[in-house]
Length: 257
Ligand SMILES: [Zn+2]
Image 1 (cartoon, rainbow, N blue to C red):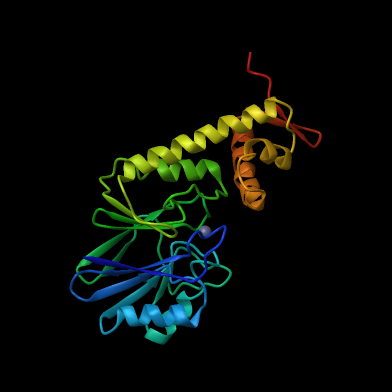
Image 2 (cartoon, rainbow, N blue to C red):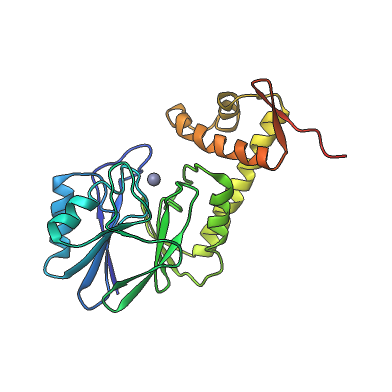
């Protein structure tokens, strides 16, 4: 098994150094492309040069966000291979849909498909032996934007203790010690959860007010992104009946008698 990374030229606040496109080879010249990235002819050329004379069997996407999936259909079409993902998205149409527990063969390798909703509903991780391609579920060197907190935490717990040895994320560097990284992510999220509850108990009643308090140390250009994760925490706190809406203000729920 051999894994190569090609960095897309889309660095930014949401993408870090840019999107990682991974080329996974079974060791015998059968390859898949994972997360080809945004439509960019130079990046497409770099991907095809890296594939070279090897046998491409598919173009996979971890999810359909615009920094991961739009180049999948063009490359798949050009190469006569299927575009593969969980579901259609804004600029992605899967030829093959993979659900939880599905397998995708890459020559001698059997990729295991793990549905990991949270960052997005359509998010998949791909496991090859003890290596996991994590997309935006787990990033190298930062926490991620979360759309749905309950599913996100369950999607982290699902990966813990499963014998993983390395993780290759959609952004940032590859990581060792997956269980340690997952524990950090869970601890970070639970800490944010309590901070947000604390902010509401302290009188913050709207998402922007909570962001101002909880993300005071984070550059304000990232506050819109933070607001989405705060909303996901607030929804979970409501589901947990720890907070409630009074008029248009969030308030701490009275503790159960
Ligand atoms: Zn994403």
